[in-house]
Image 1 (cartoon, helix red, strand yellow):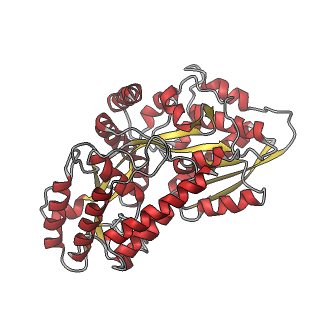
Image 2 (tube, rainbow, N blue to C red):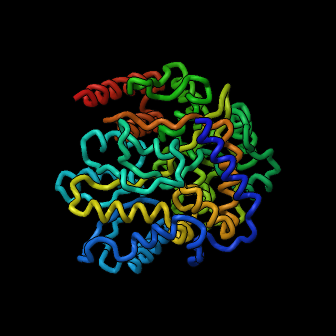
Image 3 (cartoon, rainbow, N blue to C red):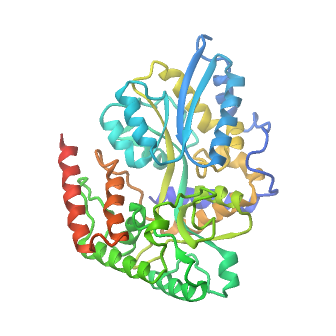
Amino acid sequence: MGNFKKWFFVTALIVLVTVTSACGGNGGPVNTAAQDGSDQSSKAANGGGNGEEVTLTIAWWGSQARHDATLQAIEQYKVLNPHVNFQTQFSGWDGYYDKLAVQYSAKKAPDIIQMDAAYLNDYAGRDLLADLKDVNSEYIEATVLDGGKVQGVQYAMPLGVAALGMVYDKTVVDKLDLQAPEIGWTWDDYFAFGEAAKAKLGEDKYVYVDQSGDLVDYTAYQYSMGKGYIFDDSGNLAIDKDTWIGFMTKMGEMRDKGILTPADITTTDKELDPQLDNVIIGNAVARHLFSNQIGSIEALKPNTYAYASMPYGTESGGWLKPGMFWSVNAQSTNQAEAVKFIDWFVNDQEAGQTLGLTRGTPINSKVIEALTPTFSDADKISLDFLEKVTPDAQKFINDPKGWGNFKNDYKTIVEKLQYNQSTPEQAYEELIKTGNKYAEEAKK
């Protein structure tokens, strides 16, 4: 982890010191051919293969900013490779993996798949992903690459790295004359801010979006309390009973006080949706998010938000993670072309200029250097946040094989608490029973 953190410190420092303009992160191509081997990536992509027409199906999830940048990058690649056509499938997070499972069952899964760490071990373990050993990794840190490996095989190529933290509406905080959340604030500060803000907000506004049904929220809390990750080294569920019950009890108290959004509002919340995200539409003041999402929320309401770390206990609660990956379908008949596209996507500087930070801080150090003069104000905010939380960040760990859908069952269990249909003690027992079922299935 030390090299990983060092690399980000150096990268962030270079970025913050050498930024000279604030033009948009999706600016036009620049001439970087003389700088490094990324020009070789463009040349390798240009007119590659045997020239026969091929259609690659590519799927990803994300915000509108990510969609737009990805489509623009694909158009750039098509200019370099006129024999390659694309069928794109993009959506929000909800339902993405349900659809992918159906596609694999029908042997119609995309050639190129945006992959999440929670599902990587599962898909790789079932031999559904191809080896990406042929992607050039000369300017990519080995520790970053390791995030996409399963048993030493590069089944996924990281596309960026992001840090977990919180966003809050600074216009509301300033108007109410509250002490703002900050880097390094504690859970006591978090609870006190909730009480103070609620007292000034009134009945129909809330302080925090209730994200207790998101496993990310509790994972951060358990980490911060010094209880380690939610899975042990053997891949077994390791949610600490007393810590979990205490956390859920406190969340219930905050719901009762109107500090957290009530269940009916929580269930319709959709992160970064301009009509459904409760922070964006003004129902709540704060929520957690990853640094690679800063550009998206800043684009929706510029000069509105500020950022804080996840609250600390005895340790930090946040971590650095690959924002997402590209993987290649092992069933694809176009694997070579798919791998070539991924190589270009992560190594080409002009592609990097188009994509900006829509998938987190790029993993290629040369791409970062080329991007530096073009960073937008939102990009600078994202990288500044990344630099500040990196020193105390927890180690990133991929979820074990077979547990990819656990987060969905976890959410269902916590929703019963949100609707007062269960107690924390009952919910914990259900959680453990559910975990035992996953453990048994994972052994098969």
